[in-house]
Length: 233
Image (cartoon, rainbow, N blue to C red; front, side, top):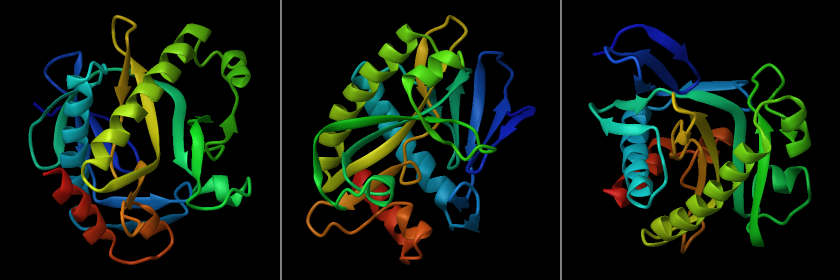
């Protein structure tokens, strides 16, 4: 089933398969932060993130979100629809953390009155800079209709995930999404949804259960990822 390596990123490898419109996505144990400046390995991270992403993609699919996920086929692998990734990282924020605190002076932990959606240019070379819809249109990364679809989908995904995590005693602080277009031009949610791409805090204690534990040397990284998996099991 697994054929040629098509792409290797910080956390995943993408392979072609016997079917032209299906790829195999393999999760790695590698961990990076600050645009690759900090690197390490987290034991069992690939296995944990594959499980978490599979559960969440299945949940979103059941709630009418078009996703690239097809099925989980091993501890670290899933089959996905082949898409051309739109070079935009979409971040949705519900609670102030990260760059909202560091760059804009928000108070960490403050709940936002409305979800805040940001766009970042998907470019490791340029450091994934924050940019506007006007930049996106000028760079021809997407058209106005694409952006309207992505924004609408992100808001709905946020509503679904807040409920999903809340039922498991977790606050969805913020998260990053990536989208791609399939062979018919349909926009699908792609990449992954995991503690690598979400900020997830315990609902009672506000303990961080996500990649911030690795970013800021808080310890208990594998244990926190495993805690998320356990609550989703």
